[in-house]
Length: 279
Image 1: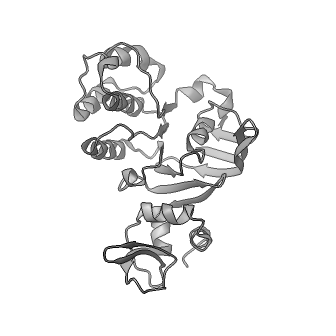
Image 2: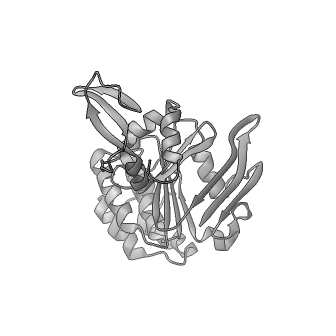
Image 3: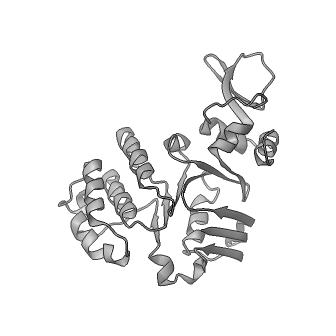
């Protein structure tokens, strides 16, 4: 669905990506992780055709993203981090905007707003930022586009709303749909994504499914004096560590620990995770 090839991009003299290559497929929820300023939002904008690469290509559904063709736009919805909604209510917004998307489902939109506990008759400009975010998320899901991109969608949501968000997004995935969610709040993507993308040092340093990661490394607590680990952080019970999976056991991927290890430039971990097959 998405093919980035030798993508190089930056602003002014600052280069954010250098010959970045990435392939994304439908039927997956991708979590794009990276430190603030790493270029997550800019990468999403390249995919959406909102900015144009210095060199290289971004192909989405067989079309060059920077052409912004109508056939491309009607199969893409982008939920930005900062949103600006008109002074209409949710129902009016859907009636005036939904027709741009051939598969928009008004009933689905209303159902998601109801689940989010957002009033449909109140002016959007009178809603809190968190409620406005829920409206645009609900609308994006209801467009039923083949590509849904969300940039920091959980910013502004309280803890119960984040749980609702994960549930609703998971239920909206189909084998024909690709969802990309960018965040620096790693724990917000727990139990939601199936594939992790980590943007670091101008490259995608990791693009692996959670199953692939769990097949290669374990996440567990070990004694404070243990040295048998790839990366570890102290906790009340000793060390919370990433160790090499040598016996085929399976542990839940701790994405926060994984992310911290990668951005600390742990080359051993990156090499293990990027090596084909089981280690």
